[in-house]
Amino acid sequence: MRQRTKVLAIVIGAVIAIAGAIVTIIYFFQPWRSCPYDDSPSACAMLPGDATVMSIAMFGTLVGLVIVARGFVVRRANANG
Image (cartoon, rainbow, N blue to C red; front, top):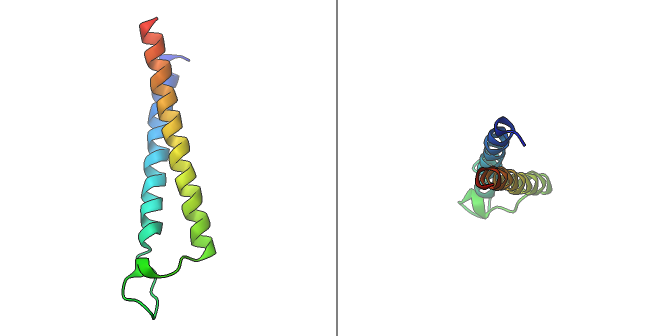
C-alpha cells in the first residue's frame, strides 16, 4: 500500500469506529424511550429495530477498529523493512 492509502485507511477506519461507538452508546441508553413501569429510559425493553441498529453499529465499530489496526500494521511493516 502507498503511504497515502495507509493514512486514508487509518482515518476512515477511525471515523467508522467512532461513529459506530457513538451510535452504540446512544442506543444503549435510549434517551428517547419512556415506559410506564420505570423512570429510567435505559430500563425499558429494547425494540427489535433498536436492537438491529445497535448490532450493526457494534459491528461497524469492530470493522473500523480492524481497518485502523491493519493500516498501522502495514505502515509499521513498511517502515521497518
